[in-house]
Length: 243
Image (cartoon, rainbow, N blue to C red; front, side, top):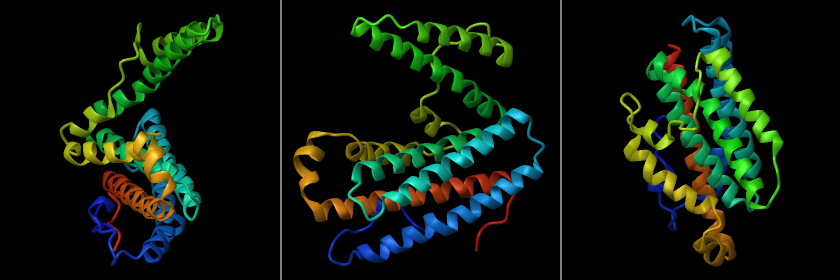
């Protein structure tokens, strides 16, 4: 699997074997990747790196993120779920970036750890704006915003926290991550299939065979990103490479 390339570089012409590729993706998503993720979980329990509790929890959550998206991607196989497959592959691409980013240094991992609250702060701001747009007074988001501020102070030592989280696009370009050139084009292509663009709604959606092939391509990309994410965590934990 380590030698597999992103599916955008693979042919979908006459020699493209959809059934063979689908079977290989099922095997990876149902068996090989879950086995490796379970080995990683056991390694994290032993905590050979001596991670602090917050960093250990972050590592576990990143592993869970891979697992969750792989389960959903597996469930989409064999169904007409092109947007779902593209969305999940994009998720796995972003997880690969964050896993590598957090593995570069404790400081990077802490930034991503902090950004959980920045994300929530941004979410509450948008919830309030959506309520304002339709004339609904939203007290819940105000209360939540105060709670986020309190947690930031109590748990992170931050008296103020804004919603300026680190964008995954910038994380991909960071030193030690070095995925900027790969990330940008793949993220854009997957986004085209994940969102109801004119090309998808008015063009591709009605072409059943084309959708099947594109979904298989997106699934293969997702499998590749999941495998690379797994390899990255294994390397960070000093685990032997898979044969």
